[in-house]
Amino acid sequence: MRPLPAALLASALLAGCAGYAIDYVKPKTSLIAPELARYGIEGSQARCLGDRLSAGLSVWQLRQLSRSASAVTQGAGGGRLGFADLLWVARHVGDPRVAPEVERAGAACRIEARTAAAAPAGAAERPPPAAAAPAPEAPAAAPAWVNLGAAPTGQSIAVDASSMAQGPSYRQAWFRITNPSEGRPSRTTYLLRIDCAARTINQMAIRRPGASGAEEQRDYGPGGEGAVAVEGGTIMEIAYLALCT
Image 1 (cartoon, rainbow, N blue to C red):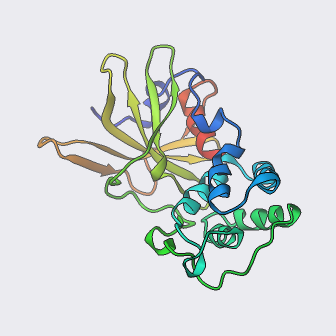
Image 2: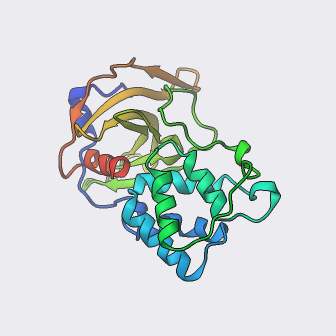
């Protein structure tokens, strides 16, 4: 399969709005609720904190916080995880708006936070995501594909949630398409950069099987193939919503 020219990207991803990612169907509180329980926040305090974080943070920000929090296995000093450890995680999330919101929500919900003197155990095993998006790199060992939408024709698109990254003015991730005639996701994947403010999508790289069957990657440089506008009612709009809201 050849790379998708910028001018054809919209038509190649044409779809309806059915099949939003589960993150955008279920309540936002469900994105962080399991981690609140792991960090010893329960009952009315958990409901209070979950509601306030859901109101103050976007789905993208909640996902960053949840993913980073899930990597920590024990509290500072090897003890049980607590709110102080969640604060530590929030301060190391790439988005600088997350930590202040967690602090405000904790104070409003009257959750006591003992000062964490050191990084929680397990934090070094998987550091929180960096603020800047990395350059295209080798395929992740364990991609986490999430179906984002399906067209009336049966074609669908999915995102590798583990590849989501954030830059100064954009967000990007690897995407793949499933054609109904094939019955399985294509082995060709696309690194799409989404400018949330400009509502554009730019193809930055492509991965596909080479002649030997091994996966090969082609990068299109810092300018990509060229930004195209996000059109309403298409899977490109669903991809935009998944990364920008």
